[in-house]
Image 1 (cartoon, helix red, strand yellow):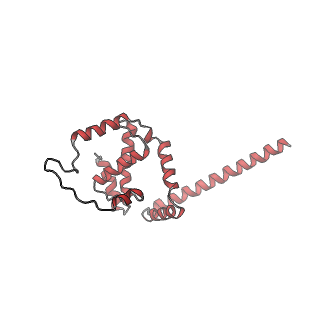
Image 2 (cartoon, helix red, strand yellow):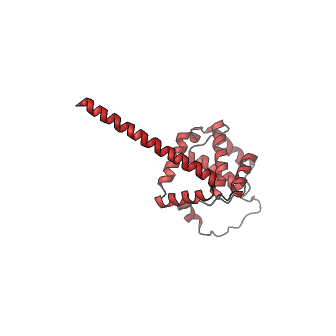
Image 3 (spheres, one colour):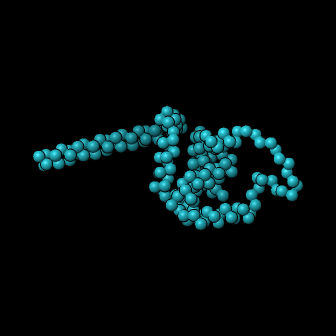
Length: 183
């Protein structure tokens, strides 16, 4: 169950005009925190994110379905099978099944929510996208930032550039000094 704090943050994102995936990010963040606290585990970073997205969908956030292979399989309408009156509707998960799922998650470790695992997952996800897609995504994100946040981001970028230039200059000087000693 999502906490009221996550719901409030998602509502705030919606008011600010941010995308559904940004709103869902609040639920994913909450799920990561839960795993780090040891309430349950996950097999991989992808599973942790999937649980968060599932919570977001249940909370009514219109997160788009995954693109690619999964979307192609479900695009064809299957013929409706006649249901026997003894069966419950498939949308209701039984308490027994819910409990079994929770117990299974509790047996998993918390390494899936580590910074390393999440970083690896982010890099792999970014590598699957083209440069144009990444650029378009960044441009879209800037639209909802607002002037104050945009200014802070620009300052941070300038700081990062200055730091990397200084580090490069230091490295070059060190290399020159080492070469001079070698001669």
